[in-house]
Image 1 (cartoon, rainbow, N blue to C red):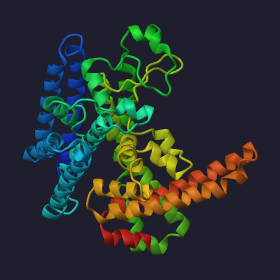
Image 2 (cartoon, rainbow, N blue to C red; image 1 turned 180 degrees about the horizontal axis):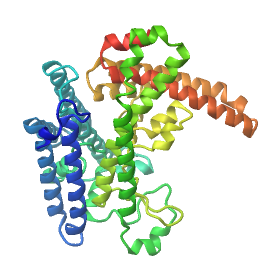
Image 3 (cartoon, rainbow, N blue to C red; image 1 turned 30 degrees about the horizontal axis):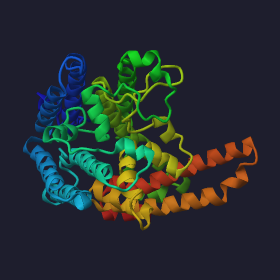
Image 4 (cartoon, rainbow, N blue to C red; image 1 turned 180 degrees about the vertical axis):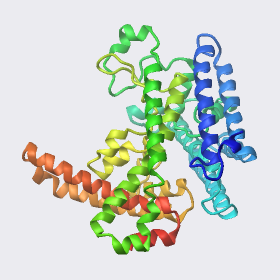
Amino acid sequence: ILTKLVDSKSMLPINLVNFVACQLFALLMAVWFRIYLHPSKTSPFIRHVVATLLGFYLALFCFGWYSLHFLVQSGLSYGVMVFAGLEHMHKYCFIVTLGYLILCQITRVYVFDYGMYSADFTGPMMVITQKITSMVFEIHDGKSSVKVSVFKVCLCIFRMPSLLEYLSYNCNFMGILAGPTCSYNDYMAFIEGTCYQPRHQENANGKENGKHKQSEPSPKNGVISKLCTCAISLFIYLSLCKLLPVEHSIDDDFVNSTPFHLQIVYLYLAMLALRPKYYFVWTLADAINNAAGFGFNGYNLDGSPRWDLISNLRILDIEFATSFKMFLDNWNIQTALWLKRVCYERCPINPTAATFLLSAMWHGVYPGYYLTFLTGIAMTMAARAVRHNIRPYFMVSHSYKCIYDVITWAWTQVAISYTVVPFVLLAVGPSLKFYR
């Protein structure tokens, strides 16, 4: 039926239709899961089983037998966790999990059509890789004699997860297709029904000890708001993606006939038209988790519940970012936290370069990814230098600060667009042509 609805002239490829159909099905199942399999009505065991089986069903629907890679990757990593010693378990598991992901990415790129394989089965594996590696580091921190920070104590895992808990965490229906990743302890609190109790929160206002502690907050308003954001994002993307292709910025006629400043404007608009695709995917994934009751993060100052525990982006902060760091901090938030926790905070030598390199390896084997993240290192260093040396001159008055914010907003958007183009073009030739 889906194939008949989506012909070769449609703007929607079949893999996108399959993805949206599965996510909408997951959204309905999430509501059912929260109402009929509520922790007060059933055991964590049943919730784990149902969440895992529904996840495998969605994976099979979207990827067929390729979804077996999810089980192989998870199984190999769990074997390492069981049989490796505590001292080196996290290192071995990190190598095995990331290595298997990279092997699958190489196979997909060089065995299947370069950049044209419709069902990218390595996408879910990227999220599973984040979850597994985060988990093993948290287990290591929980069982290690080395002291960790107060915040890391909240993430520490003090017992080995069972195989069912492990598979449920990695492959549950809420996050199997698009994530986002989350900490194991947060997921277990959701399954066991303790996620509404007072927990470590930076922005809580203390009302958890008052009336809000006695009642479970409803995710309805948060889910509806995020679904509206999804609809707007999808509409914008489908309306503009064909009108403003990034590839047009390296067209010879366009380059030769267009003034340089207009080329910059086109580049910004092309990247602006591309981002709603990610807004749609990540916001829909967040809404699904919220609909199931996962993602509660305390209360705002006005007493309204916050459902942003595992949110992956802040759109306004992205579009109005006035620094390279501010943009990155609000884009793919859970991945940024993963990179920070498993690499940046643990790497003893040049953590910035190591983090960008790990990000490139995790994304895939296309050369454009490496060009983007290598450029990102230089951009980050440059942004730090500018902020350190120039910003103090503009902090003398409010008007000067406003001027500084406008200028840095424009330069940030140009710098991000310039950096990310190889990420979109993928191949070496077009990327180098763009840089030239």
